[in-house]
Length: 243
Image (cartoon, rainbow, N blue to C red; front, side, top):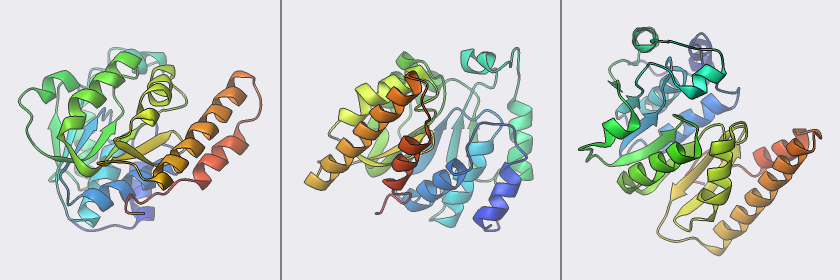
């Protein structure tokens, strides 16, 4: 598989239907590249393959490794809110992966997260949670898959502002868990690294991210401009988990 530049990957991924911001694809790429030697990549929620392409290209640029793409490909409440009903995306997903030249790295698991975890026993270097966005399902995905994430591995959540279930879970549980070192917030993605313990610097950075997320959420509820808090969050982000 030919290694591509971030710009080249962007041109390919932009042709695929999905919901990744301009900075989010490259951020996923950098995360996958940095931890590809630690274990496989597990993606919960693939839709038509936009994020899968970024993850697979990042793995390829690092130490290689497989991307397990979990999605039943029949849509759900999240897609219905965006106007997609009675969808069947499996063939389109596979075609997009093939056209992107990453099909040899991607293992499609056409099933739910609950079904995929039965019998799972592989170490995970990067867990990307972008499936059902309800509080209960995000919680299930984290606490049932996290035991397989190796120490030093990364867990990333999507839509941590725009979907109430994800936002609430991240703000109430993820950011207060002492086994997760905050790597940063890039647009809608919050990434954390699994660690044995937090340093004083880690705790300080966590407090900053919590404060800025609270400021962003308050501004959103009050209808005020969102740009400043969001840009501050980007300023404290570290795109590479080795930092």
